[in-house]
Image 1 (cartoon, rainbow, N blue to C red):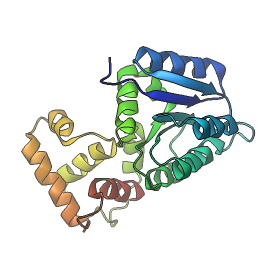
Image 2: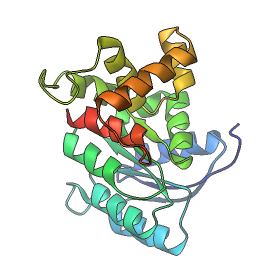
Image 3: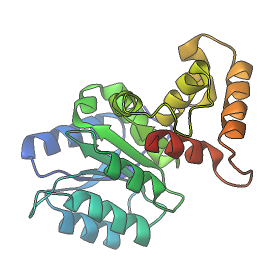
Length: 218
């Protein structure tokens, strides 16, 4: 069970997936206060009673384009403390960067729908977003990595620093990255410091988020 029970609103137009999400979230120890099938209902529910986390599909009725994303952007503007976790069928750079760049203390996440089947990872992502952190699907990171330019802002990073930054983009902590790479946490802190320095990120800003955004933009 989680350390605390979160209030969650789910927006997904496909009934089977919506009910599946409700079941997973509730089995994870959280309360689903609403499960809706369109973006307008999502915005209304959050306006009336802001939850801890919103989970929304990108494509929502009536247009089945980016209504869910636009609803998420409106929620972030009006309720910046609410964590936003967006689900998508595919990797879309513009969706990802616009979501992560949205101001506010609430965490943000972007997962491919296949990730829902990895229940523990999905629930961990909800917790990270609720805590103000970031959760980006590893497959999204992998695909974006394959599109990077050799002469981009990351050109000065070593292979190991790029590896660490990719794991940072997934939302992993230094301790988790250290365990994944089988090195000490002190070594990861050194790599992270080098990344910040090489990307010329100013102190006083959220340099971890800035580094990840630089990475995702390439």
